[in-house]
Image (cartoon, rainbow, N blue to C red):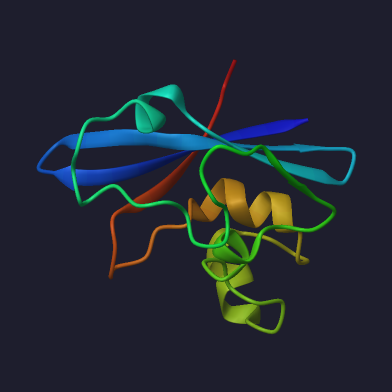
Length: 112
C-alpha cells in the first residue's frame, strides 16, 4: 500500500493538507482531510477537480487530476530524469510529487 498527502501552498511557507490518496491492490482512494473540510472561508482552497467534497472516492485507475500532472508513458526523457528504466505510475508519483511550475500543489508520500 502507498499513501500520499496532497498539499496546497497558499502563502509563503504555508501549506494546507487537502487530502490523502491511497493506493492498495490496484484500488485508488481519495479522501479530503479534516483540515480542509473544516477550513473557514478562504477562496483559495478549492476542491480537487472531479472529486467533490463530502465523499470518499475510489477507482481502479488514477484519478484524472493526478494523472494529468505526471509525465505520460511516451515521455522517455522524464523517465531518465527520474532514474526509471520503465514506466511505473507509483514510482513516478513518488519521484515527481505532482509539482508543476504553474501551481502550488505538492504530493508527499506518507512515511509512516
